Length: 155
Image (cartoon, rainbow, N blue to C red; front, side):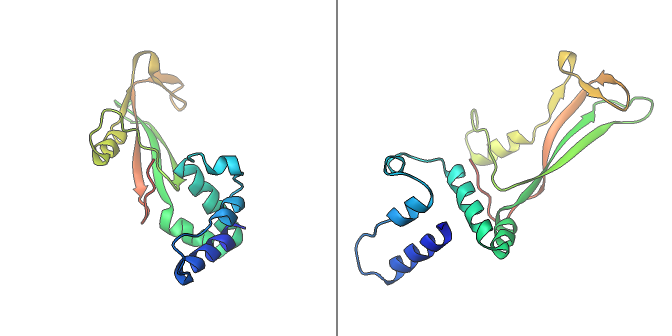
């Protein structure tokens, strides 16, 4: 099991005077074959496997992982103008453990995060179908952070 192999490896690192240690038991616990261990793996995928293994090992670990790594975003859509004196909107809140940030065209992570928060205009052929009105209307669609985690994993 992954948590046990991690514990053993950290104990060996702490107590051993060897200049190198084998990680084969941990690699095997992750389910990587000999061929897989030579390939580069996606950090997000590795974190997901690790978090799942730790969560299954104890409910306390699940709480700690979510306390440290879980954040919350709101995906929202809002009418651009009032219709009959009323604005219409819809929002869906989602928990996340990692954040995929598109970086193309951005010089820094901060710039990329700001770009994520810029609302998209839904107009023309791409108008939002407002169920309350029963018609398509111009709208803004965006994302906002409700809660940032203590540790933010960015990909």
